[in-house]
Structure formats: structure tokens, C-alpha cells
Length: 284
Length: 228
Image 1 (cartoon, rainbow over the protein chains, first blue to last red):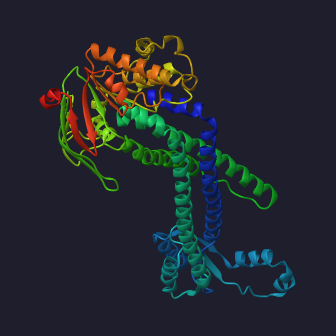
Image 2 (cartoon, rainbow over the protein chains, first blue to last red):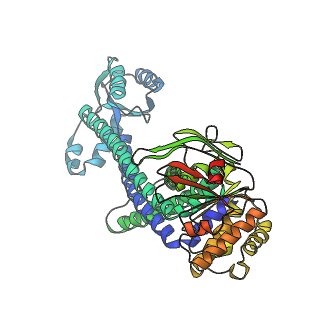
Image 3 (cartoon, rainbow over the protein chains, first blue to last red):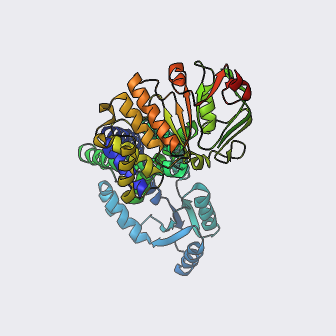
């Protein structure tokens, strides 16, 4: 209780210093927030592209439905496979007509439907990588009535590479931004602690315990960090909204990310206070 | 109450600040610690207050030994030893009352008791009427009285004073000295560091410990000193 009262009193006594500290924390976390929005949107875009990764198994003309059904059942039982849809020759032609209206006349002149029936195999998330796709394709190829298996090997390889690069970049840059934000927060809190070094000195002088001295500072650091985190979340949200309205649509980050960012600000504030005050606790 | 045994204090940059210093101050005694600037007076007080540890030898204060008291436990000693300084070390931007109350609050006095005690302490040092004034509005002598009231917050057994009248005029200085004598009469052990020889001479009954270049060169309580 004393710790909370003292922390709030310290904020009241030096509102400008608290505001400056919170602003420094907010600016540091704002950069992290913008990066989080960018990486979340990149992740979402890649996930959407990934959803289109599928294996198409072309069936030789004249194959009995029962044989195709056997293949479908075996593929669906594979751990990588989410579902398999049969597309008949007629459906394939109808789709081609719809997708390629410029060839409408050509389709009308055809006496025989040249398009094969196929099985479109959807993969589960987490298995849309080159190895899993190749495994499903290899399994389908074993059937003699399978004419061809297509999944755009090069395209899947590139997508997978892009995803890995995206993942590594996000981790490295995210960690770098977090470290920079941590250093800025630590500096802001150190300035706040430095401004109150006389108080710490007097507390030590008259016999306050280290824990008693430390608690209000830890709380103040955490409160400043949380305040900065909330400000940063507001600024990031406003920026995302502005980009959505003026340039292109931007997805807002999940609430858990935002809560984690604000809590991270509080935690950084608390740790930075702990480190900053250690020095003064040794001085008297 | 205070005992130094063969205390040596060395600093990496300054060299030896105290060299084999031994003395003992009994409960309820008043002693001056004199010597030129740099003779080791402040170092001695820092060691007694356990703000620092001796390089060798032992300091024992109110039963706390420098060899066994850790930094985590030093607060227990601080509640038995009050400390006042030449530059007062008061918190700016607070009133006299708030400065004293702060010391009470951080040592766990309840809020209800705090007000009464702070007022009583300020009355003890003759500052009741100025309790609500900001410390920067007070004279040097008055600020020193506030710092003494703060030092008395935890009912200490020992009062250490490091050049308490160094920044004061003669009248204020005498007033502070009378206050210390009054506290001593009530049973408090007082050790006061000063280089003001006139002040020391004005109180011939008070024991003198003189330091020179880190050595204890004179103790008025020894038989040799009494004969001289």
C-alpha cells in the first residue's frame, strides 16, 4: 500500500518527468508496434497465399469411379491431407468456360471434352511445405490410372523460402527493436531514479530496508512502462487506421499481441528500475 | 557503544585514510572528533555508520560488528544511529514537517502516529512554529535543526554529527551545540566531528579524539593527556 501511495505521489510530484519517461517508452514501443503490424500483415498475406497450395491429381479417362474413390480414401488418410475433392471432366470444362470466357467459341466447337477428371487435394496448415507436398504427390503417382500430378514445385519452393526469410527477418528485427526499446526504457527510468537519488539516500540513512526503498520505484517503473505501452498502442492503432484509409488495407494485430506489448513495457520498466536503483542502494 | 579496534581504511585512489585507529566511546558519552581536513574524520563516521567497511580491523556499534553486518542488515544499525551532516541533506520541495515525517514513514511508523511524533520531534529542536515551512525558506541553523529532528526519528542510541556547524554562524552553531548537549544529558551517546577548535575549547569537559593523517594522535581521556 505504501509502495503504491509513494509511486503515485512521485508521479504527482514530478508529472513532467513522468510524462517524459512515458513518452520515451511510448516512442520506443511505437516502433515495435509498427513493426508488429507490418510483420502480422506480411504473415497474414503469406498465410493466404499458402492456403492455395494444393496437389492436383489428374485421372486417366475411363478410370472407374470405384478406383478413384480408393485413391481419394488413401490420400485423405494421410496426416498431411485435409480433404480431397473430385472434379469430373464436365466440371473441369465448366470451370474452364467460366475462367476463360475469351475461348468460349473454341469450347463450343469441341466435339470431345479434352479435359481430364481430377482430385484436388487440400493440405493441412503446417504441411504446406515442399517436403509434405512432394510426399502426397508421390503417393498419388503410385496409382496406374493417375496421368499426372501437379503442385507447382518451383512456386511452393519459393513460397516456402519467402516464408523462412520472413520468419527470420521478423525474429531478428523484432529482437533488435525490442532491445533498443528496452535500452530506451532503461534510460528513461534511470533518469527518473537519478532525479530521486537524494530520497533514496535519506531512506538508507534513516534505516529503511532495501525492499521498502525498492518497491515504490519498481511500481513507478512498471506504471510508467504500462502508461508508455498504452500510449504506444494508441499511436500504432491511429497509424494503422491512417494507412488503411489512405494507402492500403491493414489488418490490426491480435489483442493478445497488444496486451503482450503493454505488459512488456511494464516489465521493462520494472526491470530497468530494479537495475537503476541497485546502484544507489549500495552508495550509502 | 562505539568501538574501533586497529582500523585501517584504504581507498584505491586516495591511499590510506585511516591507519590503525582504536578507541572506545561508552554509552552516554559525548566526544569531539577533531583534525584538519583530510585527517580521516568523515571516514571514521562513515565506518561507524557502516556506509563503508574497514580494510582491516573491526568497528562495533551498538553490538553490530563490521565483520558480521551485511549490507542487507545495515538498516537495523541505522535505526539506532542518527546521522547529521554539514550540508543537512534535507529533501528539497518539502516542508520541515514532511522531512521528519518521511523518515518516520520509511521506517514503518503508522500514519496515525507519524504526525504526532514528527510534531514532537520538531518541538524538541525548537521548530514547532516553522513545521509547515519549505526547508529552503529556513535559515541554515533551522535546517540543521530539522536534520537533527529527522536523525532522532527512530529514537537512536547514538548521534553522529559530521561538521554540523560548518555552514552556520557562531550563534546558530552554539544553539546546535546546546541541543546536542541537551540530548546527551538525556542519555544519548554523541560523536561530533569538527575542525572548529574554538568550539572545542569552549567545552573543556568534552572528550577530544584528534586525528592526523589517518592516525589517532590525541585522546583527552588517556592518563597521559590528563597529566599534560
